[in-house]
Length: 301
Image (cartoon, rainbow, N blue to C red; front, side):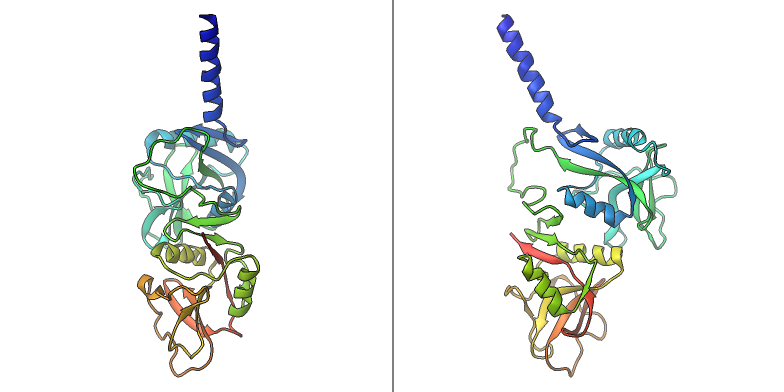
């Protein structure tokens, strides 16, 4: 009998330990790890820092989790001068529509009275450590933040439909887009190149400039443009002045299924190589050799 009780206690403690095997400065709740970063930074940089650890800014789907995070953040961010922190809610992904950066359903809100503000620049949400309500804020403000990732040591619930893992087996620092089954990253719109230099850079790390095959990819590129206020090269190129468009990776150039040209584009009566960039919320074409835009790279899995 004592042996049975000892075995039961051992297994119980083992399960509890495994279920809560989250990183330092984290808590575990409902098979997810919530990590608190007392580093004040802008919304986009906070999301990228979460991505580097295989996670996203936190998404919230019920009132208890919201209250839990508010109370835990008050303890973890007690030395911060800020009274709120970034969560993963933003309109940068889809204009005038609130979405979570992790792509989960936006099925719960806890907006403060008069929120969200319908004014330009208030595109990112912060959660108050004082009262637990959300406010829409300027994405460039510096705040602490909370990242969320699945606790893979916890026994998963059975799935009825196939799905990819949270980070899609992307390398650290790369952002996984399930709809494209591809990783985006390595530069993330932070440095400017000519199209040719950008493609060479991506190829040097085993990637390509992005061929666009889903609306999710367009939304991701547009979110980077909104965050960094810079246009981004795509992998779409023409060698005959824009008569025929191709992707640098050899896949079909079906980008116009997921967006349209900006007014005045593509340019007419031009010759030679033309390359396509994303200019939120449309496409533009320019000379590949002299024009300088920012870039992000894509690795198809």
